[in-house]
Length: 248
Image (cartoon, rainbow, N blue to C red; front, side, top):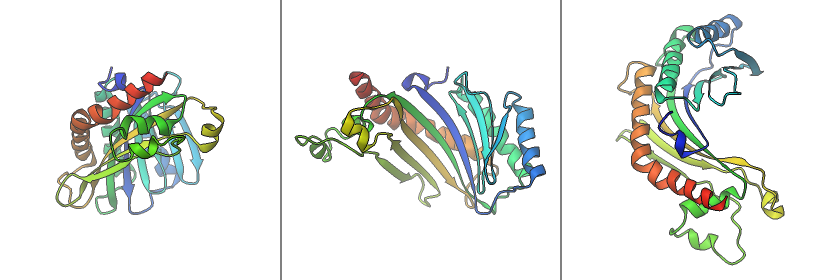
């Protein structure tokens, strides 16, 4: 079991390779790329075209743990939902990023940035914004506004972005996504849905110290782990999980 599985209901690792130019959309190019991915991971058998120039290949989702890869106009994306071990996610992302330059003719010049992302989903049947505010805004100047008599929190999705180097080429972004609307708050009818915490390290391309996308991925994953252990778990994930548990 991966190190983050016990912290939330669902955990995933994703990568997003952003291009300055449009990705190849020719039938043969697209099929050859996804066939190469499928050859590396034979259980990725579900292929579909979702929209114009948007393609997806993934494993069956029924088991709850699955790989996926997608291609759209200006992005190559890949992910592993609930990986058995982080090394399994690494192997998937590394292979996709190794195949991309050869099959999709991706070069350093056209690359804008590479994102490596952790996401953590917490299932909760209630006011998402209220529970996030209680977990993360308690004791801050915002807490008083949320605690006014008769007040009901309708929107609280904190986001923080920081530069991790002097040139601002390596950046970190934390964001929380809630899925509650005013109608649900007004009626008190809340379906169970995930509160999501997204934690991303972005490497802008051009002056990066890495020769390949796979090398950069491993560095970004290392940075994510270090920041998750030192900051994210004790200050965000832990308080959020504790608050949600107390309300269920």
